[in-house]
Amino acid sequence: MPPGSVDNNAWVLGALVLLAALLAGGIAIWVLRRRRQRDTERRLHDASCGILKNSLIPDGNGGHIHLQYALLTRRGILILDIKEVEGHVFGSEGMQDWTVLANDRRYTFANPQPGLWDRLAAVKRLTPEVPVTGHVAFGTKARFSKGQPRSVIMLEELLQELEQESQADRSMAAESFRPYWDRLCAAAGSAQGEAASGHSQA
Image 1 (tube, one colour):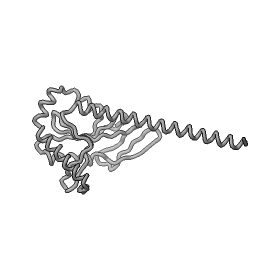
Image 2: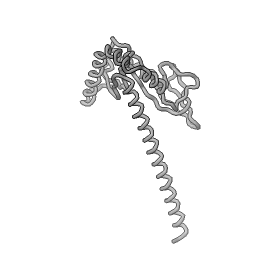
Image 3: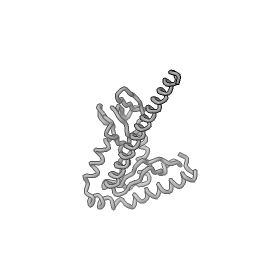
């Protein structure tokens, strides 16, 4: 075999090994994220009296708005947007984009507060009788060295806060909100059906 062929074969083999390693690493990261997401969803389910996930509700303007999570709690309805970012997060209410610094990487994402407030307004319109609050919750790998902006909370802190409430107290308090929660769930089901039929204007 000519020497050049040996070099080419070695190069191809090395490239295949590198590709396999990258694929394996990518799959491992995906599996880890899915496992973390399932654990978060289980804890949210166990710490609340009702949960809506990835639902559409009417936005009051003829369209629909997406809810990542809505929870029925002893204090009312909690709207939750979860952000998984890694690094130091710099943002404020007046900034259009927030910045993340992670090792040698720097990137931005849209300020999540206006979207949360739009969701809160849509839920309050459907359930004006119930206290409605909301948070943008960041995972454990996010750091806010300059302080957390309004409506921002660390996900683990929120989960622990919800889990500290006893099941009995949680259930008794939430029952008074049940009719209004059912109204929200019905609106979400109706909106999902309209969107699936192509009637959504959002």
